[in-house]
Image (cartoon, rainbow, N blue to C red; front, side):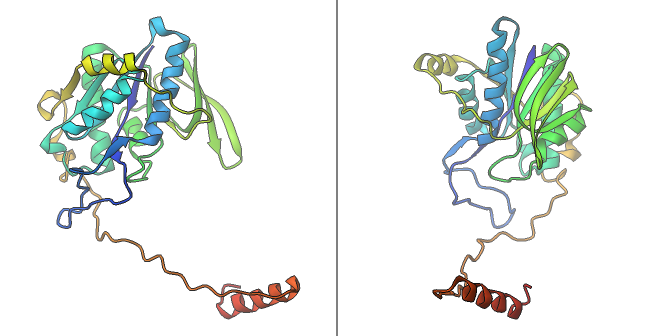
Length: 268
């Protein structure tokens, strides 16, 4: 069983810095962590590996600057076996469409070398962008079935069986392998690294994939060139509110006053 987990390094702060000219995220000098939902995705993959450790490998893939190696090393310490980083100036400024395309081309390149992946896990979304688009778009680029909002997953023969969150509760569904799964917050927390696993992870090489390493990639679909998303404006929302307190000993009187105010505001 060959598993791929896509991870992203994201800012560990609410003080997001934006380039005022390019309208892109400035990562330098901002503390970073492994994206929360990607950590859950890795934990699900690690649990599948726990069930058959001799025949299961977990490959990690990320895209970003050289500093993203720290996130990959952290993931290597909690279950990953090998790690790849897509890093090239030509990838800078990529939106979700360009990012998913680059990652899909990197996956193809890795598969040419090491063989096909049986299942790909991604977090449902990145906490810095919250689009939830990259995972499903990778699945579309690779022509894979996509299962989303998953909280549990297991392998049953040639199928992946998942518990998926829905508006009505949870669904138990399956898909033929290979498939792509996006992971929501799970009932179990991601495992912690041990001192031994941290030391072992630091010794492992992070394989860097550049634009020149990808055989079939199209430069026009990468970076700002391949990003149809246009950011018109970035700003901090004004969170000031006007509040009217309704106080009366009789709850019925309070309800009547509230209804009158809502009617006056044309909410009702």
